[in-house]
Amino acid sequence: MERGAAMKERPIPFNGAMVRAVLAGTKTLTRRAKALEYFSRPENDPGGWWCARVSAGVAYMVYKQSPHERAVQCPYGEAGDRLWVREPWRSTADLDKRSGSEIAELCLDAGYSAPWAPIQYEADGARRDWKHTGTPPHDGPPQPGRYRHARFMPRWASRTILEVTRVRVERLQAISYMDALAEGAFDAAAFVGQECTDTGESADELARRLQWPQRAFRALWEQINGAGAWDANPWVWVVEFRRLPPGGPR
Image (cartoon, rainbow, N blue to C red; front, side):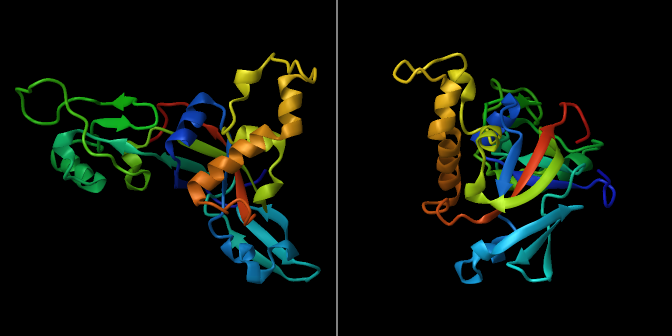
């Protein structure tokens, strides 16, 4: 696939459950409604719209049989672009009064070539550079500081970089069984090799028939977006990605 421009990098927020699924390799796509709100409003007849194509990070929406297209730029880029994950985090208690940008300024003023700080990732408790930043002596190990929302994670603190592999557009409830699995909300591994004794079906067959992955994703969507968010059936971006190996560009 040819790219329309040079590779770009953008932030994307993930909650703790999403981060754990990405790290486990069970989440390889995400659905987002940003920038498609117009087509999802009841007064704009969401069911009358359809996506003609997505090309170079732009979705072309058409209303019924109209010859006209409405172009919408994807906020998450196109295939080949990168997304750096913003997730809930903490630093040490002695840095609680400092924002991420202030910490970066302190590092540069101190002569460091790049910003750094002790980081604790809330999703799994993993730590990076977990050491004292002040002058010794120190009374014990550093103490975790205040909780910081994902939206406040700076680029230098991110540990997860994703490469976009494909972008498409569809209604939320159109999610397939395989896509629901790739959203990482359903623990399919727990059912591998099992059989339902009542029906003789394999666990996979039963999960498909009862749409367990879709139900798990619906619950996650409503947990994030509120009650009724699934029934609203908005238009969403389906962003497929692969996680880049740790130790790459920061």
